[in-house]
Amino acid sequence: MSRGGLCADLAEAAPVGTDIDIDIVLVFENDKQSEALRLPARIVWCTPLDEGHQVGISFRGLTKDHVEYLAMFLRFLDEGGVDKPNRRIADVDDRFR
Image (cartoon, helix red, strand yellow):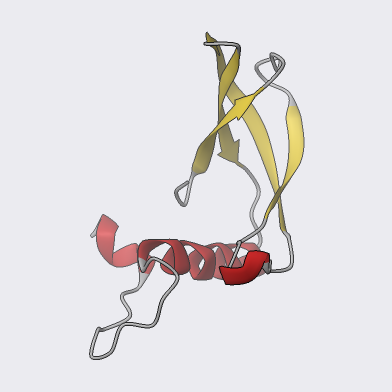
């Protein structure tokens, strides 16, 4: 997953160009979950893989709130979901400068 989209494994093929809404959920210890972050997206590629399909999903038309919540999710994933003392919390955009 990145600021621009994600790659996912699906059981069935998904038509390229299909507009979808995707829910992203963080899973914490003890199987606790965050609220779903629903983002508008589009299927940009689909290829057979093993017993299913792998798809490329591009986020589209994100609002300012979407971008902020997505950045928070990415920071959590980047940091491994744990607090790390004395570590500067980097802005996700720092990786792209």
